[in-house]
Length: 196
Image 1 (cartoon, rainbow, N blue to C red):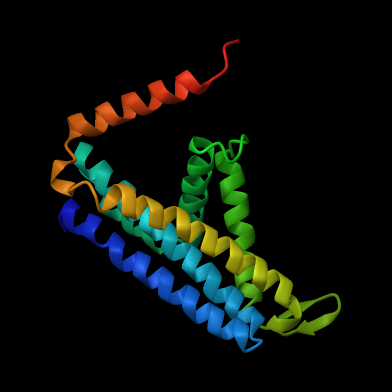
Image 2 (cartoon, rainbow, N blue to C red):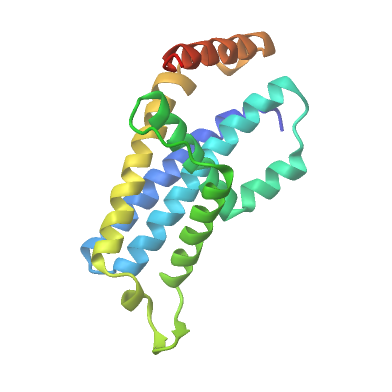
């Protein structure tokens, strides 16, 4: 597969995330909160897949892509969630929506927690109190929060798609242009830092 074909695949993952969110809203309306949560988390992973595809395609411009690693990441739920969390954090930092930089371990911990709760939203479980069904584990307020969060993340990814990915033709992404962008980005970032 060519890097340009990989880059084009981002549109399908974005559309699938949108479809999953719409399905989650239908389930939520029907009072199926655990299943709505599950689909919201799957949509989160699809948004993470979008980030993975874009970053991998751009990396492939610089050097040969390790397809083995790419497909390992592509199939990893935690990796896709971590990629989206990183992208969201980067967006928030650039737009001054937050001042806390998450560390790599925090992404991994949060992604693992989301994966655990996702499994609770789909399968019967057993704890000290006995057996539970998903709707006992995932009440409406948790599903509401998950839907709100994935919609917020969708806005960030959709904004990137609209203002960056779909505007700049992939064939124009040369190694030199990417290097210049990175240099300029870090100059802007350095300029924003307060003088010590």
